[in-house]
Structures are given as structure tokens and as C-alpha cells.
Length: 272
Image (tube, rainbow, N blue to C red; front, side, top):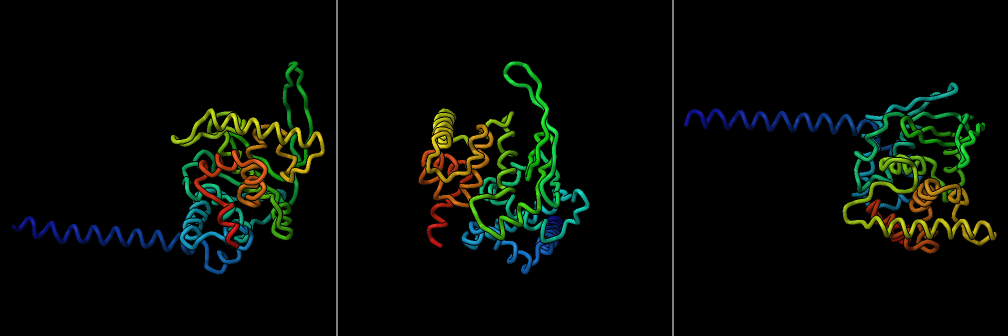
């Protein structure tokens, strides 16, 4: 009896301590993204703004966790503000809203340039010839490194809303390489059919390439025709920014993305 009476209060104390720790953790995360900043940041994404409140709450939690565990580094003298960090964290959270932060576990930093940045690329063609080129980019996702972004490109997206989302695009590349090389084939969920994904993405990619060659009327960003990896990244960003384009032009691809991301942006955006 004595033992049980002593054990009871200790359990209560442990439970109380646990609740206090959870509350402090919640307060820490909550304060990292104030109500005012969160409301302002939500306006940068039509899709996030249209989500039900419970999904926006989950999105805010994910954004707060990203702010806590990822480093945000300015390049070329850029001073990274809280507004910049919040904006990037929100858009990075959208693809993983219903699949979880573990999908971003393999990278730790985000580098932001004031505008486009120059990179030196080297690759070998099918004949074994090495090519070197200089490119100006607005975004880059390094397989063994950070995501690199242009703040100017993100500002342009916010000022002139379109079917582009640089952050989601680069995050899609990070999801892609979880399965090895960047080839438009992220690790699928257990209930998804690998063969069906490969078949439908292959067909849609070649359809889009054919439409570009014949000056077709497709409104999907032609950058998707660069290669299968870019096709997946462009389709992913369009899935969240202008879902009707994927839904109407490539319905099979839309269904696969819906299953992969566990989201249905077309239905959400139709209700706006």
C-alpha cells in the first residue's frame, strides 16, 4: 500500500513534467512563426490559403519545424529576413503536408541568392565526350547538398501569380533523389504500382515533348521537356499551383501525384 501511494504521486509528477516540456516545445515553435507573419506568408500561396483550417494548422507546424532544423544562408551579401525564411518554409511544407518531414531528412541547408546565380556544369554525353558550360539559374537542388534559390524569382512569383513555384520545384527534386538518381521516380508508397507510374509518366512526358515540337497548345511549362527529372519537378509544382492543368492535360499523372502526395489540390482549388 505504501509503495502504491508513493508511486501514484510520482507518476503524476512525471506526467506534469512531460506536459510542461510539451508546452514549452509548443510555445517555442509557435513563437518562431507569429500570427501576423503566418497570415502574411499564407498569401504567397493560393493553394495554402484555400486549405481547410486543420490542414493550415499542420502546414504551420511543418513550416515551424523546417525553420528550426534547416539552416537558411544568404549568398552574395543577401541578408536573409524572417519574411524570406517563413516564405520558403511554407512553400517547402506544402508537398510534405500529408507525408511528413522525414522526406526532407537527407538535406540540411537552404542557400538564397538575391537573384539568378551562375554555375559551372560538366557532363559526359552518350559518346563519352565531356562538355563544360556556364549556366545562370534561379534554382538548384544538389543531390548531396543544399537547395539553392533566387529571392528575386520568388518575389516575381508573388507579384505575378502563375503556375510556377520555385521552392516546390526544388523540393520535388529532393524527393526524386531519395530513390537514387534524379529520374522522375521518387520512392513510391506501398499501395502504389511502380509499373503504372513508369508507364503513365513516360507516356505523358513524350506527349508533352511532342506537343512542344509541334507548337501544341499545352500550357504546361515547356521546361518539363528537359528530361524526366524536370518533368516530375514541373508537374509537382503545377500540381499545387495550377492543378487543373495537370488534371485536364495529364489525368493519369494527376492521379499518381494525388496518391504520392496524399493531396487533391484540384478539388480544393475548385471550391475557391
